[in-house]
Structure formats: structure tokens, C-alpha cells
Image (cartoon, rainbow, N blue to C red; front, top):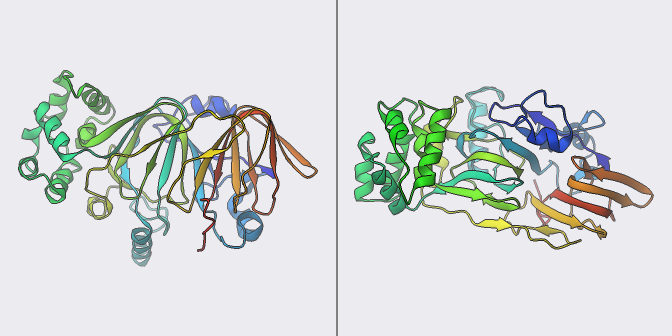
Amino acid sequence: MRYITPSFQDYNWGSKDFIQDLLSLPKTRIIAEAWYGAHPKAPATIDGVSLAELVHRDPEFWLGPRCKDFPYLMKILAAEQALSIQVHPNKKQAEQGFARENSQQIPLDSPQRNYRDPNHKPELLLALSKFSALCGFRDFEDMRNIILHYDLDRFFAKFSPFAKQPNPDTFLDFYHETISRSSLPGLSEHLAKLSPRPPYEQELRWAQKLLEQYPADRSIISPFLLNLIELTPYQAIYLETGIVHAYLGGAGIEIMAASDNVLRAGLTQKHMDTHELLKILKPNPYFPKLLSFTSVPDTWQSFPLEVQDFSLWRLELHHETAIPKIDGAKIILCLNGDALLKRQSQSLPIKRGASIIIPHSEKGVIAIGKAELIMAAPGCTAAFLN
């Protein structure tokens, strides 16, 4: 067992205090994300040494005999503004896209790059505070009704064919029009003057918030196209690949396959490849299943996910319990309280904000104390062949 230190991302949508408070850091800069993993973009460290380098030196010790690469990336995410609207590729799309851009000799750190690795990127978001998100396209009839409700139909030439025959093909034409880079004369002014009217008050309020943050961006109408999700602490959503989504605000734990592949659809100044985006997104209505942890003392809980790369666990520790027997490296983060992780003659205290990694080769770890712990681990099938 070792203490592990995350790497940090200071994107401008981040928070001035959430991660700083949790990890007891000075509030001298914005921190958007704390990364716990071995992704080459920003690996965590152990005693100042990159986790990616340690895994490279001895993958069997850290990951076990059936896994050569660290399979997941856990993040603490804290957003005070909306993140970009985005979608992530499946495994085949990522492998093909990565190979194609390599053959085109696009540097891995190029802002024009879509695929920075050959991996898919399903992900799970567990809220630690009130958390707002957009996730999955609305039911087409609902989408049509809300556009007409706020008189937005006159701004989009492709809306009328979609309204008359709502299906994935007509919707893709309409959606393509809404994510164009060019500004749309009159749209911002129209949204700014609107007053919320039932039954879509919250959707308009969010569109007007996005208008303040991204005034020239057509995709400020995304709350009318995507499902608006409001999570309370310890509720979660699982995002399959191909699902369009955006995190609007709040703090949470995010865990995903170890990938940094993002295709953006708006609310950003970064590179957007709409042709590639439309190839990989799923254009059908989709509403994510809301997941939640319950309060069960001294019992590890996880969500049943159909993914091999990762699993996320929570423990309300009151006395003593064993760490689940899962193949691969496990990272434990303490959210509250104080505990002791013990294995044979080794004992490591863990308190709020601290994190410990347990290599695959170290078994029989017990947690003792009174604390709230989050654990990132590989998926429970242990089928991690590369």
C-alpha cells in the first residue's frame, strides 16, 4: 500500500474551493479536476514518481498478470461553469480514429486531434454536491414541443422537416444546424427576453445561464434538446459511449476507462469536428438510469455496470471491514473521518482528502475506524485482457 497524490487540471470552468477544501490545499488557483490514475496526460504520483512509470516497470505487481495497462481513471471534478457538450467513442471507433490520425501524423498534443488514445470512454459520475447535467437526447416529441413553446423554430431551417417527421435522420440534420460554429443572428437576443413558462421553466433558466457563459454559441439551446438531470449527493449517472452530455455545475467523483478521447458539440472554444461527432453519436432519445448509494454501515456497495474497465465503491465505515477481493490496483479516497488500512504488519492511516493505492499483489487489507471511503477498482469480472 502506498499514499498516492493526484495530478491537477486548472480548466477555467473549475472551482475556487471544492477540491481545495477536500484535499486541504491552498485556495490560490482554480482547480477543476484531480486525476487519480496512470493516464500519460497527467498521471498521479507516489513519492514523487509517476504512477505510469511505476506500472511500466512492474505491471504484474501493480495490475496482475492479465492486465498490462492501468484500466481506469478516477477524477474529483468541481465545476462552477458548464463544461463543453461532448460525446465519447466506443472501442472500435477509438481504435480506428487513433490509427487514422496517427497515419495523418497529427501530433498527440495537437488541439486538432480527436483521438489521443485507442480506448473507449464509458464513464460514471457520482455527485458529491447538488449536480446539474445534460445527458442524452430528449424524446423527439418533447423536443419538438419545447422548441415551439419558446418560438425557436424560426431560427432553424432544418427544424420544420424534423417536426413533421421526427426520426433519427431528420433529427441529425436539425442537430447539425444547432452545433454550427457560426453565431445565429437574433437567437441570443430572443432567449434573453424570454420569461420561463411551464412546463419548461428550468430548461429556459439553464439556457439563459449558458447564454451568459457562451453568448455567441448556438448550442446554448441544448437544455431544450437534452435531458436536464439534477442529482443530489450520492446519486450517479452512467454514460455509455456515444451519448451526448454536458456537466453544468457541481462536484462529484468521475470514473472512466483510461482515455482522454472527447468529441465536442458546443459550449467551447476548443476544436470541434462536427463530421466525426455526427458519425459516433447515438441519435436516438436516451434517458440515463439514475443510480444511488444507500446507507448500510460497514458494507461496501457498488453499482452494477456492464463495463470491464472500472467499478466504483462506497463504504460507510463504522468499525471494521475487509477490502473487496478484486483483481487489479485499487485506489481508496477518504471523503470524511479517519481510518486505518492494515495488511499484515503494515498500517497506513487515512483521513479526509487522503488517498491510498493497493497494488494487485497486496491482498488481505482491512479498513478500521469511522470514515466514509470511496474506492476505484477494475470491473468485477476481472476480464482485463489487452
